Amino acid sequence: MNPHCIAWDDLPETRAPSGVAKRALAGAGAGLVRVVVPAGTSAPRHSHAHEQFVQVLSGTGTLETGAGRTAFGPGSLFHFPPETWHAAEFETETVLVETNCRP
Image (cartoon, rainbow, N blue to C red; front, side, top):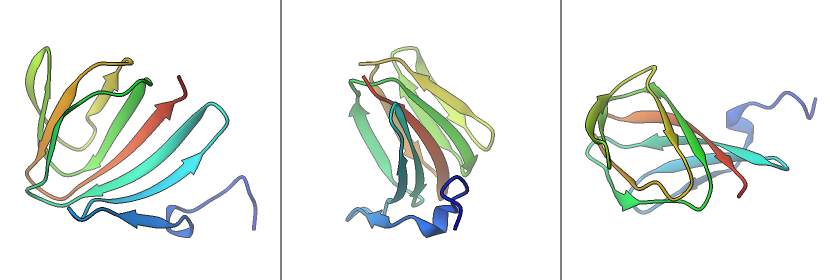
């Protein structure tokens, strides 16, 4: 196995009671997380101490931030500077890849 080429399916999965499934790859300065969110799930308003980038691979929903509410779908990108609050509603099963930068 090449430690530089990893498949998401080779990483351990965690599953929350809500059904949200995550697989994470940690690096020295950042980490990637593949997130599968079931349809009908809501993520309440929250923020992080770290900068976060999110890419929507599939699915649809609505993102809410201090700038308002915006529909999202495949190809959407989110950028949250540290301490930026955000919330989301997922209309369909959604697959995201988060990049979480270390503070």
